[in-house]
Length: 101
Length: 162
Image (cartoon, rainbow over the protein chains, first blue to last red):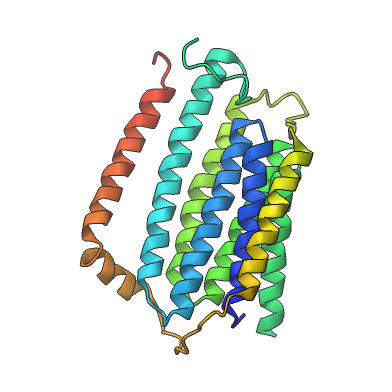
């Protein structure tokens, strides 16, 4: 718990799992969950470097902004997914590849 | 003792993150995501980021995760038992991600990380607040405008007649 590299390993694993979710899952909401994992991995890195770089709290502020962006992104993405579902009866992102219907 | 707690939290985070991407049932993925987000909040506590841990629980678990579960409920017929979804191109995806992870892990393991020795602060809330109101005031205001815009955009997108 006092080694920076442990946190970096955890964050690398989270990032890779999130990437795997984004590239293999085809349900729009599952893809969104993968994106959330990736954003969390980035946040762990920000806070870990802030802690081991002399407790510089600017890193916390950065990860706060990341959380704000994640909230905005989740709201808009879910609104888009629900609109796609209402007009096409699917949430598969491969089927919803057209901009017009 | 706290070393043991750290590895326990790390294991919960990683294992439930695996369940998020490998589970066949979408609702199980959402529940596993809950434990991943809780584990990340625990890691923030080990990193002396008390405010970030609170924000993680409030915004991610209380906001984003509830939104995701709403999304699952609204886009599937809940009376059908199987809210399933599949992974496509599992093998090639796993190969690409494994190569990427090996590359990351080898470069992380070989880098000489410099760590500064610091004492644990009693709290970080006042420092974060001061930084938000002085050095990061402009990004803070831009983020609030972005949130307002996404709020209006999401409401406009999801109402009945677009």
